[in-house]
Length: 338
Ligand code: AHM
Ligand code: MG
Image (cartoon, rainbow, N blue to C red; front, side):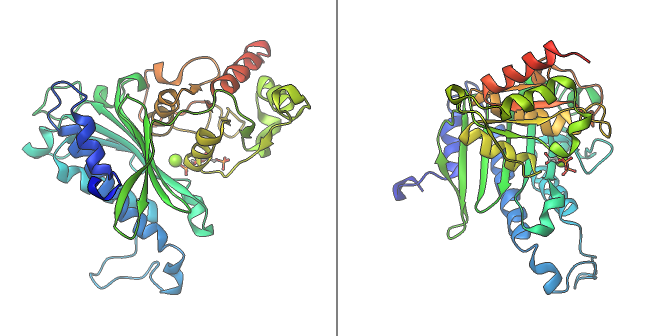
């Protein structure tokens, strides 16, 4: 579609493939299929408000299937599309306790592991607030042609070969990185294509937005409490007080802060003593994007991407966004150990 003055996601993926020596097109095909699944899920998400009006929810449809919950639908769409690509040998998702793989030769030959949160922030669907899909891709460690093993899934975030998210918002966008910067594509619904709209995104080194669920304030570590006060204090030199912005959808909160400059915080709380967000398919992909855009992601004591996951659904405290803001909260945490 370049002749028309736009670059589609597929054009871009193919162009970029030549930057990787020895690339055989497998990752390109995989990303292409992510784009297809994203369009299908987008269509469904946009219909969410109509479901009740049309009387679809919970009833048996014409094929005899019961209407599925939106996050289960998204999960199945992505797994289905990526299985069809033949490039993935295994999946780990928020919707499934165990890893998923298929026992056919085609799937076993896949080179990649795909981890995702198919519909993050799904409690926001019913109220027309932005939600997202987060994904992370690893090269398998086990030999091709065999069934994937747990070590394939429990790799540190540094090993990611690609990561990204799709935000279903006032427009639908896909942002992804393959380790050479972050690029963003906006879905043009009139032609049904993701079109390059944000090239090589760099997040501001410092920002004026902080995003945290302050309802949990009394349970936060002392360092976080003090950091929040720091954000609220007056200091014209550093543009404080900062503004508080919290949607409660990680993708939407991160996306805004990435473009405008800010920090997202989800510390440990009484209800979530090791944090709420999942390392493998929420924090790692977002951390990789943040670093690729010049930002930073921390657990408060170290880099998110360096952690070797202990289990598929492991949770960690998560601080991500503009580099200087993340470093500042780390300073507060180090100086106020409880
Ligand atoms: P989910 O995976 O069950 O949707 O939960 C993850 C979401 C994130 O999108 C968001 O950052 C966080 O939960 C909000 O949690 P809280 O409601 O505790 O502020
Ligand atoms: Mg989630």
